[in-house]
Length: 576
Ligand SMILES: Nc1nc2c(ncn2[C@@H]2O[C@H](COP(=O)(O)OP(=O)(O)OP(=O)(O)O)[C@@H](O)[C@H]2O)c(=O)[nH]1
Image (cartoon, rainbow, N blue to C red; front, side, top):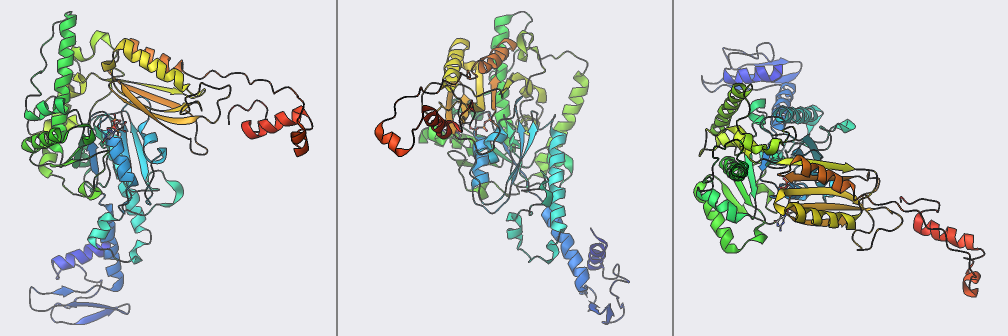
């Protein structure tokens, strides 16, 4: 707060204090003094009804300071939900809807290779009129590994918003609080990736997207102390989907029935069964903990269930989590006012969360020297290095009223998910080959192995036309692949002008090292074979009409003309 504001505040708290020497205060009578030609009256009426009047300049300063404070309040919305629940789809809805806010998305990408950023924002979202911004926080759990990054990102957004506010906004017309709440800070100059186009929002981590999309968020961060922000104990939104058969028991309270059982070393089958049980229990815990912290619950993919199932699920959520507003939707399409700027942050929940963090730290310390007792989640000696830190939502686990004492690591680890990322830039993927390989792989290895796959592929031009790979790659297509549990779909479009062609795929699931390697090799094996360009057509007799048109006159000219039209000027230019 600036010196003027401090004095102004002090004077309003106690008119006898502060402001001395600034405007002049006659303690004994209602007098007016003048400073620098500006009116500076501090009228003292009957005791207790004093009224201070600031100079225009002082008022400006104070207003500016308040403005700065107000603008620094950047609401943050955390979006979380399980793999494939529809978080990215929802964030894209937020980004493209016309709501008058500018949003930044802080996204915790779960996986070795970033995909979600390509699916958000510039990656093909039809944007609304407001500039948007996506900030990536690769591969981490919001509550542990990337917590510091999240705090940093939010701080920078706040600072950048404050800086913008201080740049000449003092003379701007005053907004109503409501307008101000909806009005994002203006872009800052210079293309600063954080301060540039947009104000903040947080996007989901891939799996539990905190968008803080657990991965996702949008909206604002209160200028709260960093730990509070980092805890993502802000507005929680869960996007849950159509897996109602599985979810309903969880919500009914018996989803934890298959809790972990002690596993004996060497009992392979039992261990696998326990793994599966533990994963189910961990998933249940995760869902419950996310729900416990959420103020808004979006039941997405309602198109995939019957109305009766939808009713049952809504009832179950309401019965178990009465604090949450439940909305059914398809493709995340809800009124944005339902989820942005609701300011539903709960201090109680936050405090509980802080306790949870303290527990985690203590637990971490206690176990640092011990062999991990949860050996069943990294079975068959799998390397742990690649185990994704699943779940910003587990941080909520301890905060979940139902299970405050849960071990944070349980939910992380028992999910037992690994991710494999593949990036290929040498050439486009032969789409026909890729689909055939993927189908074969899932048949052979089992569909349940891969929980989630997603990618943006540079595919041969043939994709979409059904034709086999041609001798030239052409411009290639941009193919978005989305898959859940053995089902996958694709969407083909053209690459935006100037975009770098590259293929990126991520697979998430119960992936042993062998399977991980097979997935990497499999994708790479689908790179299109670059065929030699066929020789130009032989010179042939030109029909009279053609000759008359001036196209002919020589076989070389014809071929050259053809090349220019179809292949961009002839030569071996196979890469248009
Ligand atoms: N039928 C149907 N499909 C949907 C709906 N919402 C999203 N999807 C599809 O579900 C798949 C996953 O959606 P995403 O938005 O990528 O899910 P996510 O939660 O971000 O997934 P992760 O990246 O794994 O965390 C995509 O193929 C979407 O097109 C919906 O309401 N109905």
